[in-house]
Amino acid sequence: MNDAADTTAETKLAAEEYLEALSANGIEYLFANPGTDFAPIVEAYARSRQSNRAVPKPMVIPHENAAVGMAHGYYMVTGKPQAVMLHTNVGTANSINMLINASRDRTPILLTSGKSPVTEDGPSGTRNNYIHWAQEMFDQAGMLREVVKWDYEMRRGDQAWGVVERGMELAMSSPRGPVYLMLPREVLGEEISAISPQRPPRAVPAAPHPGASDIARLADWIAAAKNPLIITASAGKVAEDAIALGKLAERWALPVVTFNARYFNISSNHPMFQGSMPGPLLKDADLVVVLECDVPWIPSRESPAAGVRVVQVGEDPLYARYPMHSYPSDMTITASAGSVIAALDAALAERLEGKPEVAARREVLTARSGKLRQGWANEVEQARQTGKINIALFNDGLKSLIADDVIIINEYSFRQEYCPLEQPGSMFGLSSAGGLGWGFPAALGAKLAAPEKLVVAVLGDGAYMFANPTACHWTSAGHKLPVLTVLFNNALYNAVRRSTLDMYGKGVAAQDDGRLMAELTPSPDFEAMMKVHGGHGEKVERPEDLVPALQRAAAAVRAGQQALVNVMTVV
Image (cartoon, rainbow, N blue to C red; front, side):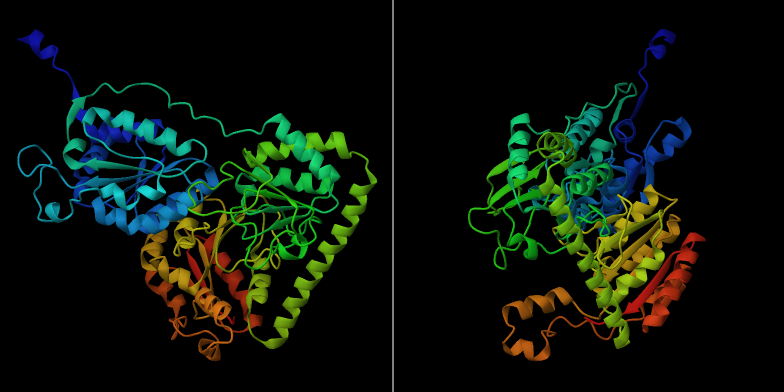
């Protein structure tokens, strides 16, 4: 009898194995919005406190969009994949807005959710609540399949380690992106062998590198061009790549336009920075290099001249998940931005070192860059004379916050032309998908990743309301993640107004300045939200009050309080 007892295998919950697999694969936090399907996860966390096994830290976030947005923000700062767990189909549905953002921004998130118990009677974890019938779907993953790289349902408890490894390796392979895993409650609650597979995470394939012949041909084309142009949105996703791009542009006098920039790509004080609108240089360019930019220009408004060579460069230069993407390409290079920049710099050295045309082009572009900066400064001064805060004056005020330890999270209203940044990795913008409500939770994720930084979320008033601000302010206070939220409050969905005026500038809707269905009046006193969340809140209506208010708010955040400055602005 003793011998039989000695051979009894030790067991544990599949949920324990799942959490340990996450930790072994580099997951530090599990951003969670829990529901009735979480019981095995809760028990597994409770057991981990006794066993001291390594598991991710649970982060309870009171809205699904906020949970996914935080994971996105954490990844942007660290480059590490993230994990989120939500409640069955309804929680998954609530997260899809932010999941679309993550997909278009190539953000590796292991999005998991529970799934209604399959059984109606019998095993541990079977249905015991009336919602378990109504929340079951024929194809739960179908609602998000288009925006994930992989979806799967864990069917046995002993699959836990394998499904995590599979999901993570696919999320991290180029081009990166979110994956989806469903976790039925009965499966998470299964008792399995306690012997975990002690193995390192699977190797992730390296990002693609350019072929030597492509680099040689591109270098030949640049060397022969009189007016080459680089257009980018995301070349600086890796901070080191932004540094390399700045050096490449300066060394070979290559103008850079950052169209709808979503990362810090190059400083606006850089002599080769030529603004954020491609049109002025595009019409004269004889070579256009599109570097990690999904929409380099708007064809209905502007395009390169006929016959101009266009080169598309990126990890997914075809944007294969975009149903239509008809930009021309005379050469398409599938490679990471950093690898192309490094190889191109070496190749250009063989072709352009000491060439007088480089110096001549540098002189012209430097002068043009200087005129642009003077023009931006003039816009600020003109706005100051009006006594009203517009986009230029708003961003000029933000300059008072800029320091080496500042991270800007931009959803709508940050403009580097008026508020130059110098530090790569200091600015992150909304995904090209444009799913509103991202900026506030992304800022919380960035703060979690870099607690020593001053994280500033620059939001429009509409974007702030989309963010479920009560949930985000609670998260800031509950998890001690003080961020500074600055609202560009024009009481308007200006994107709706601009779209109306673009199509019907001479129509009846234009008689009201396109404001029909765009007004957000009366505007609440958003700063009052801080009273119930223990933070610092101020409203600013006059230009002369902007900088002092921002400074007070920044001081409060540095002292450990969250803060919000509600800046009343004009279009």
